[in-house]
Length: 382
Image 1 (cartoon, rainbow, N blue to C red):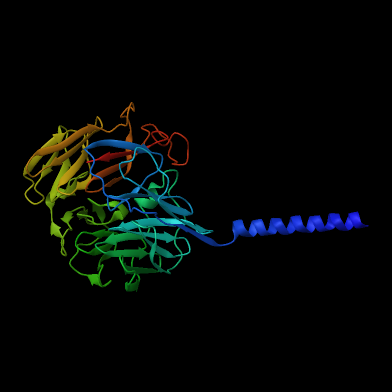
Image 2: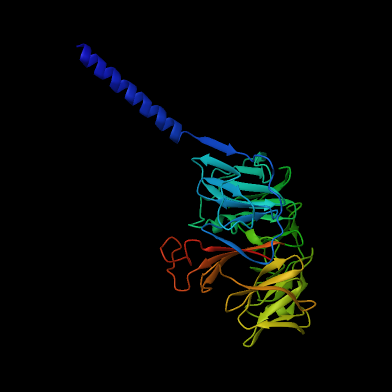
């Protein structure tokens, strides 16, 4: 009898332990690990390739790299590190999924599937502010996380404003403090922001400071051009009739040179692909200002320079106004062969990150062979 009781007691203890372990693992929880001194500093690296990574970083304040996974964001430093380093801070939420991440200055704003916004000071890893909102899409970053850090759905920035949009409502917050500026119904679920402080939906444009409609825009739907990550700060657009406009001011300016298919805008010039060159032209008159190798494409703007990628995968950092070339280097790390298609891209004032895709690849990003390599994200100083 005593043996039976002992066995029953042991079974109860084991069952209780299993329940406790299951609760500890599955219970809703948040885990925050913050930076230990010193805070990460901005490095000044010489132009050229600095590393390659298996995951896409959101470069924040040119001092840290922020990575996204299904239930966590984390950061490492320095930006020019050859590979992914041990996290200097991390933030995990269970069972919520990370929907997207944006940054304004050093502030990193994450949006989660339950609608929670969590802003973290990227220099310290401490939480700066929080806000609640409607449910958001789940994680869609695939293997590299690029979709979550470079193309987050319903998450955009405009100056010091963070815009959060969904099917039924849009909200705007001051990025540094979390102060809600406005909330409005009836805006689009996922538009883009323009340099002049406008949030642009297929139906029209809205002031990012007030949420009010702006009547000076042509009829949509629109094609954004010359955008930063998170479809933000777009320097131009094509309207519903295919006409090009510059949007770096509060009122759009007609730019006939942007009508051309495949053209884009950078530093106030329109870049048009031609059979024998990539031509930088005046946006209004169409007069040629500068010519670059045929097949080159604009990756983004770094300060007062434009970053190009040529057909043979050379990175060119150029000043189209005065014709100078700051740097040219091969888009490859070590012995890699520069044979890839371009996926997502981020360009900052000091750095470039490129998600490289296989030239012959399946349609599904989750299928093997879609990406260029295991370390498929190229990092470079510019």
